[in-house]
Every structure is written in C-alpha cells, then in structure tokens.
Length: 223
Image 1 (cartoon, rainbow, N blue to C red):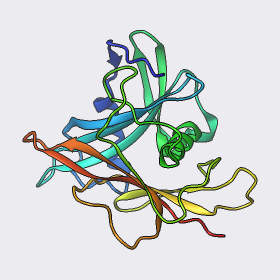
Image 2 (image 1 turned 120 degrees about the vertical axis):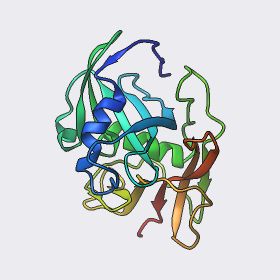
Image 3 (image 1 turned 180 degrees about the horizontal axis):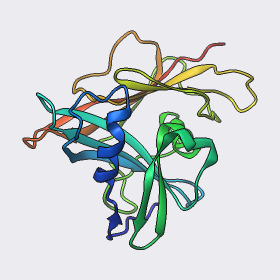
Image 4 (image 1 turned 90 degrees about the vertical axis):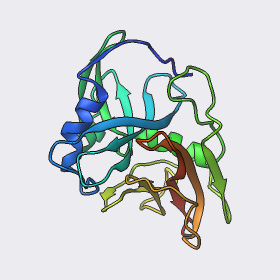
C-alpha cells in the first residue's frame, strides 16, 4: 500500500514538469508551460519501494488549454534502465532525495499498469492512502489481457501518446503495444482499434468541469 506523505518536495513536481515537458514531441504549448494539477490516480508497487502516480496537468501557456497525462515513478536510487526517462530529482521532506522518472520507461509502473488492465490490481486515490479510486474505469475486450506480461521494451513518442512494447518475459521480441495517451481528450474510447483492454479516468478542466476519457490501452496480442 502506498503511503501519501503530507510534506514538501523541492523542486516541486510542477516545476520539474515545466522544465521537462517542452522537450517532448507531444507537448504543444509555449516555451514556458503554465501548469496546474488537474487530476490523476496512483497504483501500488507490490514491493513497497517505488511510488507510482498518473498525474494529469493542464497547461495554459498556449492559445488554448491543453491537458496532459504524465505517469511518474518516485525512487530512492537511480534506475539505470530508465535513464532516458529521468525527469529530475527532488528533495522529499520525509523520504529524502527522490529520482523521478517518466513512468513509461520504468518497469515497475509498466508492469503495474498491465496488472491493472488484467484486473490484478486496483487504481488508488491520488491524494489518500489505502483508498481505491472508483472513477478509474478498466475495460477488457476481445480475448482480454494475458497474465504475467512485462515491459517496457522500446518506448516511442508520437504527437499525442507514448507507445511501449510489452510481452511475456521469455519472448524474444515485442508482441503487443501499450499506448499511454499524453494529450487527454474527453469522450468514449475509440471503437475498432483492436484493444485487449483499456483504462479511462477523470480529470478537471480549468473551469472545474469534470471530464472522463481514455488514459491507456493495450493492443490485442499477436499469436
């Protein structure tokens, strides 16, 4: 169970993201993002070592607000395999220095997102310890999501998503793609995209209106 500490981080999450996001191909705002937290949820690390957060932020630096999803992990030590996904480091008021990663590059986040899609774990409230988030919707489609998947393999950034290859531990090559949406849009999940499972969740617009839309989906597996 993740424990939510009521403490400070220096620099703060939004400050780190404002410096990091303009380098990403899916970012479509100004040179200096104006970010506000807009929602999200957490997943638990079964080992209790890594913080996992799916943060939603809205940027108002461009001509119109854009809402982004940034999945992040918080670690007490650097993770060499996720070096390309390092967002930055921050001093946590309780836990000390934390290495903060773009979670699409971190094996713990990817495997727990796959577990969520497979129905083996439950999304948790972003701000409260040991409290499931009932607004997070998980749908299984077709033949469903196989058990025991691992990743990430390669991570490819597109104009509005991150594409992460995943598969069974013994596979020599990727057998499916996990799509993590970066630019969030309200509405139902796309139809006819061959997904084996998908996650939808809530966020808030700048005016306070609640929105709901796709956060991630797993493509059907090749056989």
